[in-house]
Image 1: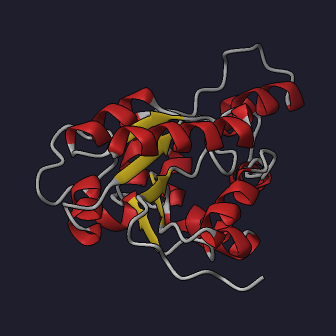
Image 2: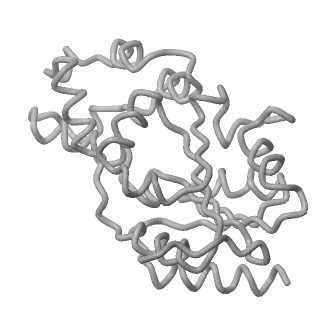
Length: 213
């Protein structure tokens, strides 16, 4: 299908990646616990080092070293393999995104992610990344979406500056905190989780457009 030229009268659609288009870390902790016979709640992956990783301050290897893998019965390479296997595309959101691409919407991806993981995902899911006109990864800008001190150099500020402060922007993220940060930057923020399905996404975009004009 031939790609339609962007329609400047339409708002730009900004999407989060994890839990909106692809799965992220959610559920990996329980998979590790089940595989290694650990009590539920034993494995905790969301530590301070994870956010340092997302800001590009440390490497994936540094993050892995911050985890008590020996306690969990895991070796680093096994963890890396399980982590990458947890990145899947179960929602079908990309089909909806492709639909909006054909309608002439400008599509933007803004994600809190590690450099190493994004490099892997761009290879495994190149057809998804190819749909986006602009891609912003937190590790490349040294700031996450929810950081309070975003300032003029924050990742969402950069999105607004790049797309134009007068442009209508609609942002979809599974995190209510990230949605709140987006509204602080003049972006119409909508909470959306991939598991809600394409019909909900269409409805949210339709309602958002009505409120913009």
